[in-house]
Image (cartoon, rainbow, N blue to C red; front, side, top):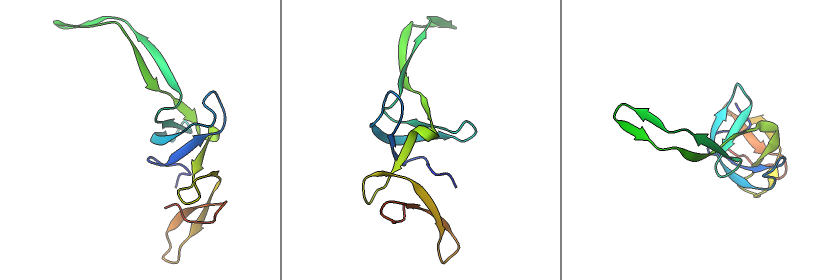
Length: 107
């Protein structure tokens, strides 16, 4: 089980976008990175290309770049604060995440 999953709200704690919050759109597990909506906006300059009869114009594309997992913290839905995450097992044997500030379950 990952500490941060797709759909979680996270807060950036380090880097140029410090203090910003957003929803996780994808998790890159092998690289230990997450892509957060509206955070770490990068620009890519694309050349004009010709694909068959159609020609694609040259443009500047903006997209969200990945951020390392150590630079984001999960925002607890119950206390609305960025907090560390712990794990516990429920009585039925399932593993869940919990907030270490307010001690409430996240999943």
